[in-house]
Image (cartoon, rainbow, N blue to C red; front, side, top):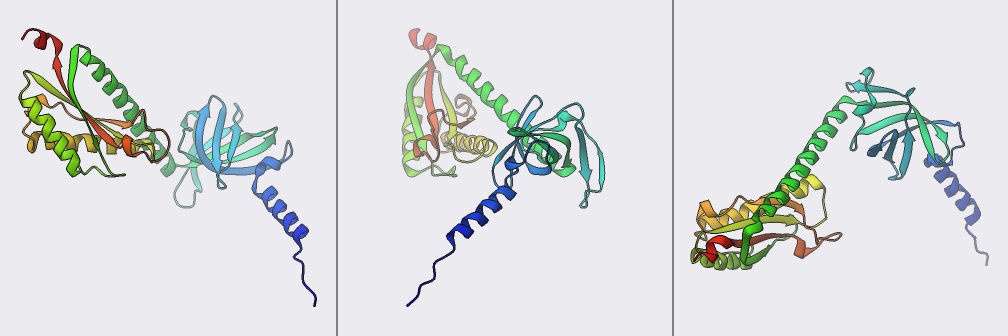
Length: 263
């Protein structure tokens, strides 16, 4: 009886050839090619993109590099653009020549629609950063305040619904607040590190708002003493991936030390 042996050497050679064709990094210096991908970083004249294979490619631009923004479904209509238009999140197509471990770009083009989308994303991230910095400064303003009680309300992944345990803990904190002179309640929402920055910022703010509403509408805390909930984005102790303890709203019952000392 005879057996057929698979042609492993031929299969390996074929696989290597496919990889060499798919990864431009094998190109020799001076070879011309076209790269397409999403910009992940812009540092001076160096641009990093992720191509269709999710591999990072480094592209260098120079004063001779031309830029164009295409319009319409066909992309035939285009107008000149500037290097400053390049930003993380923008899909581009680049005519390049191989140079060492990277590529030199002769021309970079992108779609007007993609440019507007990248602008909107960048604007959202800029707002998020400003909000986080403002929230951090706001917490520093409580330097003369003392925390009498702290509650961590935990949430399911992607959810802003308050659990039964969370409601019980909030009711207890509100009861203590009502017995406290000149109290304030500080509310800060957080997420774990899964998801993108914009989504996490929105979710953390939604969770904080849900807790604030519950304290005012169901727990009986005075609206004027429950400060507007702050969305802080990813928790500092979130680590990587899903972390149940990072999906939370931290609620603090605080009082001014001067008021307390004067009692």
